[in-house]
Structures are given as C-alpha cells and as structure tokens.
Image (cartoon, rainbow, N blue to C red; front, side):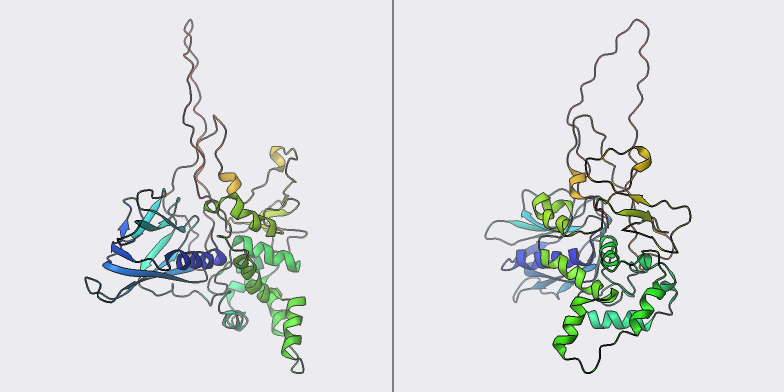
Length: 389
C-alpha cells in the first residue's frame, strides 16, 4: 500500500509531468470507477499537486479567459493499495485509468490518469484534507512530534508500538514497511507497549549549552523513534522514482529493494498484529505479541521450504510478473475493503487479496471414451498493481 513517501513522490511526478501542459475539456470518469464524478470543464486549465501524509491534493486552475468562466477546483486522493498517476497518450490509455484529464489542442493529445487496478483508492471534491489526520511526518515534523508527546495519555498508545505507528491521527504517513524499518533500526520489539517506548522521549531534551551544529550531530548519531519517523520516509523520497510499486518496473524498484533492511528481508521474522497486518522484525517480538502467534522467519532465496516454514511475504513487483503456462489466474477485483470497526481513519488496514479459486476438478471420463485434450491459451498474468503496505 502506498505510504507517505509514495504520495510525495506522486505529487512530484504530477508537477514535473504537467509543467507547461495546458489541459482542456471535461474530466472523464471510467464506468467502473467507485469515485464521484468530477463536474469540471474548462477550455484551458493547469494541474498541480501537493501531498500531506497519505493524501494527495490535485488543483485544477483555469487560465485567464478560459471558457466557461469558473472557479478553481481541488480533489484530494487516497491511493488505497494500488493508486498512482500516469501521463499517457490519449489513444493509448493504461488499463484501470479511472479518472482522466486531457490536454488541450494543439500538440500531441495526452491524458493524466489516476490508475488503480484494485479500485481501493478514493478521491473527494474540495481541497480539504481528511479531518482528524495528524500533522505530516515528512513536512510538519515539529508539529507532528509535539502532537504525539502531548497526547501520550490517549488510549491509542496503550497498543503495541507497531500498531500505534499506523494510527494516522498521530503518525500521518507511516505505513507497514516504514514501521518495520523504523523499529528495526532502533532494535525496539514491535509488540512493546507504545506508551512505554514514547514516554522516554519526553525526558530527552537537548542541553541549552549545545550549539545548533552539536544538536544536529547528536540527532544524526542517535536519533529517537519520532526522529526516524521523519528521516526514514525522507530517505525513500530521496531515492527518487516512485518508491515501491509494480508500475515502477524492476529497474525503478531496485534502489528501494536495496534500501530495505527489515521488511520482507531474508532472515527476518514476521507476525500478524491484531488487525491482520504483517510486521517484520528481528529478535524478541515483545510482551504484547498476539497469543498463539507463531514467529516465522523468512528463509534466504532458493532455500527449500515446506508448508510449515512458509511465511507471508510482502507483495513486491516481482510477485506480479506473468507466470508460466498453466499458472492459476489472478484474483478478481474485490468490492469495498473490509476494515475493522472504528479504524477507517486511525489506520489504513491491509486489504488481503481475494482467495484464489482452486482448479476445477475433472470428472472421470466415461468408460470406453477418450477425453479430448484441452489446450490452454492466453493464460492471464497475475493482477497488476498488487502491493503491500
């Protein structure tokens, strides 16, 4: 699932791709889209983007003299599991382009598309960020840190730290792979109580005698949890590309995969938290680990694994490649995501793929008759765009 860095990289992509382009006409919505229609039409307008946490704002601004005369319009997007923006020729739109903004003539006709294979992404009209989300961990660090430390009495911090890190009221932009990387760097057990971990940060105050350069050096040498919630997402943004996601392609994804230290890395263990999301870690899981949960270690690539050793790995682009002839078909598109009650804002729960139907069992051929051999053709690849948060 795209996290804070992916949304920021998407806003950079939109601004770079749309720089100098003039869009015109109506905004189109696909027939199978789950988002609202966008009642915007102008003979000439420009598009720009900005991001905050796990949301992206798209601004449509008519140029002077454009007809009909109208006010600018803003849309706010949440990407779900597979949302992204692409710029494509008008006559070669990508699959699953559920929202399309077309360039105006003259010149090659292009379309900025919001592409979402699994259709869990959402957008709403108006430029307001979703109410209740905390300050952005990337762009509003001081406000973000103050918001967390001021609210440690909140019941959200009675949870294990790995679950509290997904609460968007306090950690807007942190998702599944980021929480694993942050906790791993500090050696914090994922199922340690969040309040226990964070209360220690209230006592950490720089000496007034330190110079600014000394304070910066101290942070770089021994950052605390909240500092890593800011600096680790920045590292992903600095990698460039689109972060992780199947539409990036293997070459674009290589830098991100090399950057990972914990999430889905061989030798790491994994457990499901109370909301069914997999947390990757090393060592002791901590005192609040789910009862009966078995910590499973991911084996190095190529190792033989029996059913008892298989562990759920993150859905990386390599998993979305076309399979060999006779492979099972990918899961169909799902309906709305099933979220635990009361967590629609606090967390962005991982939406598990729909179960793959088993191969149809053949009926035994009647005695004396040979069954004609069936030839399979056009085997489908796995569904594009699968990613895990």
